[in-house]
Length: 164
Image (cartoon, rainbow, N blue to C red; front, side):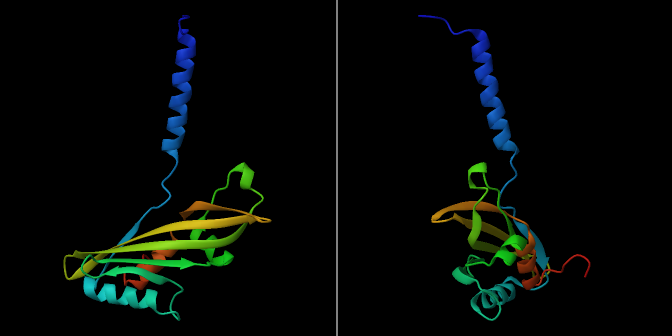
């Protein structure tokens, strides 16, 4: 049996190390946005649930709402291209660069935590999934948030915006 040459072993270790480092350097896809609303959690919960449940206010649909757990999950599908480009950034690999945006779906998770002074600490996370097509072929990509939607939801929750 032939012994493995040290240079080959070092090369393999280096290649695997670089690949692992590159993956670790990629920024997270979902970055929560948070802020403090001056209203109690029950009031913020009611405001957000009404917003997500009223078609004239938003296109979201509530998929989970637990006042006891202080969590609301809402989903919007069929997001138009103009709105999608404000809310999400999708990176395609070279094989999918010619594909065109076809549909976007976003799932929001809003967590409400009691804060001193009868206020609420609101945390919003958005998970974006974009569907892209070329002819009859489609692919769905997990996309990064621009932060715009999360800031809009914080505003609805009553979190004061910087500069106001």
